[in-house]
Image (tube, rainbow, N blue to C red; front, top):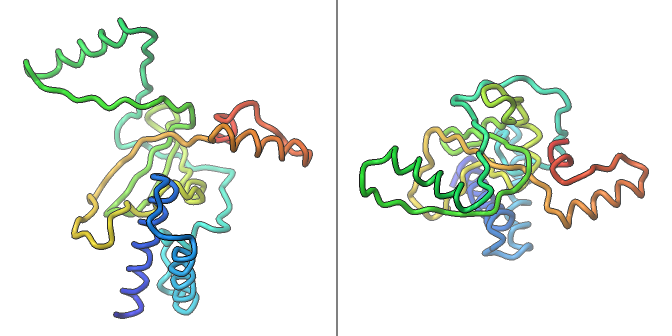
Amino acid sequence: MSVTDRIEALRKQINFHLYRYHVLDSPVISDAEYDQLYLELLALEEAHPELITPDSPTQRAGAEPLAAFTKVTHPRPILSLSNAFNVEDLYAWRTRIDRLLPEDTALNYVVEPKIDGLTVVLTYRDGVFVQGATRGNGEVGEDITQNLRTLKGIPTRIPIDPDSDLAPPPYLVVRGEAFFPLDKFEAWNSARGEAGEQTYMNPRNAAAG
């Protein structure tokens, strides 16, 4: 196997395990085994710096978030989500959906808690994370790609089992929420206060800041 192929294989493995650990909370290898993969990749990239790419897992550490942002036009409007305050609101929404579909269309729904964070829009090309932006006004947001690269919960590549023959989609736009878990926010905010640094009123403001 060539150095280039080995680096590519290591990146795929590491991204897969990062996703298992940080997103699914279900690692399949030990921390020591992960460290071994990471250190091998780091050594190969240090020996061959011309092979380093921005999406490599090694490029997360030490990245400084940007304070000033450029504008990004979303490929499609990022609309706000409507609220439902009672069961009647939910049924009314279901009725509106039914009217848009052929009669007797079978539907399945996935329900999850609404996380109050900062809406972000991630763009992947050929499985590689190339841009991250805020929602902004729904049509134009701010480019926060470098800031998002520091978050281990955001894959720099779409995670695919290294042993699979599956290929990522050529173009994918994902909408989600960047948020600060409450328990971690309280500990972090308390430490900032003790250090005489600015504290935040709530986790959402901290995530946005």
